[in-house]
Image (cartoon, rainbow, N blue to C red; front, side):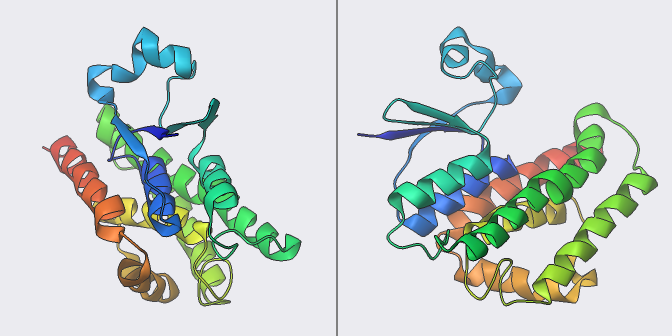
Length: 215
């Protein structure tokens, strides 16, 4: 049974899932959607996902949206052990908190600053930049408490957060202002399985869009 994954590589949430699949050792049947051409708005895709968003996973009849939900599902069902997504309630709660922090604070604030600029031609907003800087400082505090984002070993929380951090860096946000993040980020690049293929290639596509928007 194949696991279909509808995605676009420039999207950080899509790269979350690609990184998770690599870390688990799972092959996904990749189905690229060109959002700029409206391929996510075809009747065929809307039948699968009425919200017509990416990422979308289809596994044996289950249609799942939201990258962090997809990550927890894949780790729970296909993980060889529970290191990426612990079964212990307290350890899992920390991973979940970091995932929700990424979705509701860090990546949200990144998108609020940069998406209007990249896709709408809006000017740089200093107040939104301050909010993103605050999110970075929160993450820096978290990473000052443990080796990885949610404890002493790599979890799916790191995979989600590194996709966000690398995407912000592609927009020239300086990660070196935050020493704990900078140290963790360098380690992620060399320690996460398949990082270059699953994440960096898509980061470069996003940077190309960012640079094109500045012309």
